[in-house]
Image 1: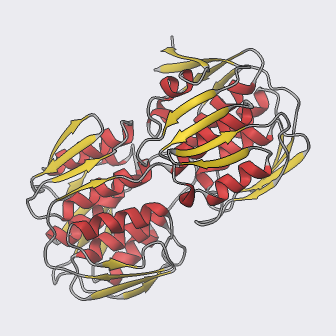
Image 2 (image 1 turned 90 degrees about the vertical axis):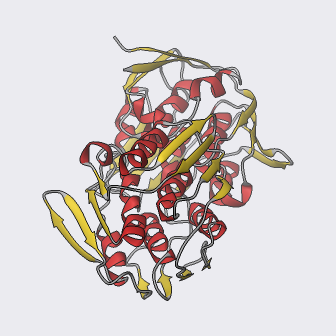
Amino acid sequence: MDKFIIEGGQRLEGIIPISGAKNSALKLMAASLLVKDETIILKNVPAIADVLLMARLLEHLGLRVKREGHVLEISGRADKINAPYDIVTKMRASVLVLGPLLARYGEASVSLPGGCAIGTRPVDLHLKALEALGAEISLESGDIHAKAPKGLKGAVHRLDFPSVGATENMMMAAALAEGETEIHNAACEPEIADLAGFINTLGGRISGAGTSIIKIEGVKTLHGTTYAVVSDRIEAGTYAVASAITGGDILLEGALASNMEKILDALETSGATVSLDEKGIRVRGSKVIKPQDIRTEPYPGFPTDMQAQLTALLAVAEGTSSITETIFENRFMHVQELIRMGADITLNGRVALIKGVKTLQGARVMATDLRASFSLILAGLRAEGVTELRRVYHLDRGYEGVEEKLSACGAKISRVKDQ
């Protein structure tokens, strides 16, 4: 295993190119299963571990995946309809092959998903959505078995919660279903709109993506295309916090402000200066970090995927802040590690009360999930002394070239083997 060694106290300044969105690229790769024997070229695909895992899964199913830099070429057709435990348990997004396989081949078997330990995240919303389209679903020995012997039929379905994954699985399945489908209480995330845009370039007919009601008119076949993945708003937000917490000045090249309104609002409330540039977003930190109260919510609210990063920033604010986590019940595992670095944080159920401290101290800390990993890097960048971050494989799942991007802006961070 690798670990990061971070020497704190460096002001960051420079340009950080923002990669393609992890939470979009994986879904577009899954949607490639809908296409009938034609080639798909995806551009701006991030070089991260989860993309490699999804490529392995597609190859297991029978597709051919060729990668060159940030470009993926996906071709062929599936000759298997089962997503095995050894791949699915490593990445929750694997469950998103369920809808496309079912729609394209009439049958699918997917192991119950794994991934970060930040909450139970049940798949029942996915299954209800597919059942609304006519799927017959059973759970046996930890596997989801789905069949549509009479094909999938369009339907009107209201999600109990605006789940991103359930919205995406139903969208993909409905793209090849007979008739029209309406998804009510749909997730509104920018990645949903990106998936709809991709399917439409394949020949699909989806409207309303990005709103709470999505309409899908099923088609008989979909064809190949070339498509660029949208930039990663969470990566951009993370590096924006890196600028704010170090009093830095960073241009987030390729970042889209329209997808990041709540994140940028929170940064400005903290005292950072945010300005738009033709190349992206510029964030300049201030000497004084101001406290605030944050509540995570489905998009367009403040994203749960930025909660850990804001916790690190507010740990050094002048005053008391609070963060209420409404999405996942177990997403404060980074707090204990921040406390090891001198943060003053008290947990009360889903609420973190954060009393800002003047300084953090470098320490040995351990990553527990993807976003928590980077919150500890952020704390290490601000801390006095050296921080040693272990289990950085969590980080590699969703962030590309972390040490290179930060080092280019003046950070003292290195990756070494963990003995």
